[in-house]
Amino acid sequence: MTATLPQRLGKAFRKRRQALGFSQESYADEIGMHRTYYSAIERGEKNLHLDTLERICTGLDVLIWEVFKESESER
Image 1 (cartoon, helix red, strand yellow):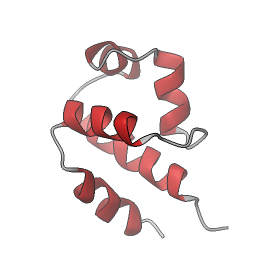
Image 2 (spheres, rainbow, N blue to C red):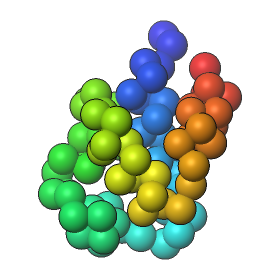
Image 3 (cartoon, helix red, strand yellow):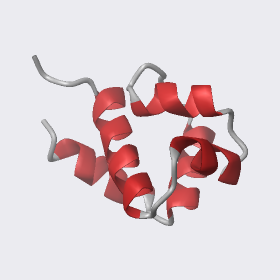
Image 4 (cartoon, one colour):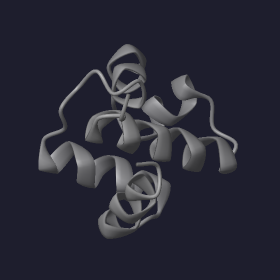
């Protein structure tokens, strides 16, 4: 089964967050988001609003297009 876009984005977020050495909880705190909500994003259970997408990418110090590009490689 092909992963959905939210699932692929979540996987890309998780990979980058872990590379930066953040736990889900510490990263969620860093960007001012509740851990359970951020966890659902990484699992691909939430459709992101553009402002939420920007907030996560800013915290990961990555451009939005880079995350989309990475998520496309997971197809």
